[in-house]
Length: 432
Length: 161
Image 1 (cartoon, rainbow over the protein chains, first blue to last red):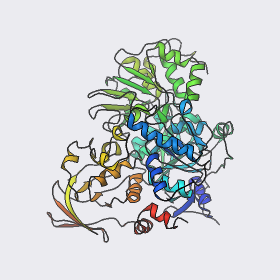
Image 2 (cartoon, helix red, strand yellow):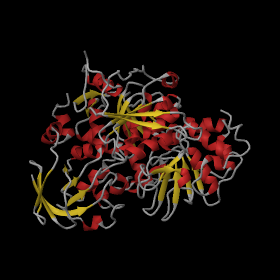
Image 3 (cartoon, helix red, strand yellow):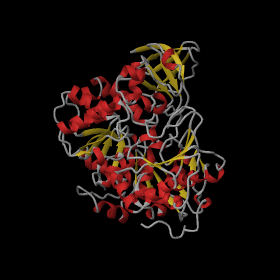
Image 4 (cartoon, rainbow over the protein chains, first blue to last red):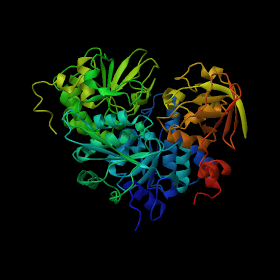
């Protein structure tokens, strides 16, 4: 009888052309997609040419997304982005976005149907693990691995042991995918899943939207994980079938598949949480951090810049003003998200509330541009990292939270729970 | 290879934002990157570090972003080896890919002490304390990559099959 496998192991085995893999095996596997951005791809392109590269292995399987320092923030970053642009044109890459079409890579690729379930993907960006929400095995690598992948279409993988996360119970309305994954990172620690895959499951996940799932898989790396896979279900199928550019392959973990351990989280009665500086694992309930005064709120990023995230923020901000001391920056992650938000009137709500609207970009999340912090300033952000200096000065601080918490905090001028600012129009909400 | 160098101590969870802050990622030039190496963990480090020195750190060194600029900056600054109790996965992979020597080992050391390390056997000696440590062996596949001269050489030699 064949060894029962997790769905991640099945994807690796399929791509490596073998019947079965076990944790610890080293496999050389064919990639369905490899990607890079304006920070990481220039080095990969350099490695590609230095090693005799002429044509990429498949012009439909290399994706380049200039999203970090775009629109170009200075001359040097303009030069980096130009390297991508020239390469994409020369190689006639199918998946290259520019001008008003570019968005944050890990929001853009799923939305455009470029990544599909069952894929094996590497990306020269640590948040490539986001596609685990679509039941793909996807993981972050460096530029050299991307360069080698563009040449050969392959990458080597050490098959990781899997930690299963089970989220049980009923998720309260104010608790989002962001809160669930922060809860998990708080328990696992920032190194807790190093060299391991996460499989994210349970009744609370079954009822979570694709946006919420993308947020959760996105932050698997914050526990050190190689990938964070969510088993495919009807929500996956509905999302994928509306946009897939290729045929998906739906895998499920076998009964009896091997897990290194199982972590169970009961989310019934859970409160929204926040990660305090300077590690994503410093997680406490927001109610325990309400004395933290803030100078900036950032709502966006590959973690929380999707339409559901903007809806959640707009629901809080509707008819209100942000605190005069809080610069509130809204960053729709993709042009499609931006246009949808316009159609739904969300942008009007944000502007009436005194928010700044940014074009799609990674921007302030990594301290790039479009919202950098001065010494002593504090930001609440829906992004993914709060390391020292992440959003600006080494003496600044970042607090990670959900869009609803960020919006409520923007109004209050301090970390706040959504229920603290809810107006009489709460039940009506925002038109979907 | 025998490495003998002066130690610079760092703590746990040193992340790639501290190793090379994103504000310097508008370039891929190793020399420019080296000028800012470890800046957000220790602003004086790049002025203090000498070729052949050794970084000793705690758990989860190199966590966070996948930026290869991090090991490149360390290597270009002349650091001969990073010894850490453990490495974050992507940093570990990147270090081998670009030829930065790293060893996984919990070493007792203080700033300025000298370590002697044998990369072949994994034996590390703190000459000041006269204590020996054994680094975790490098996986066989990684040794193959190193022997080939790194990932790109491995690819070029047609070994990626």
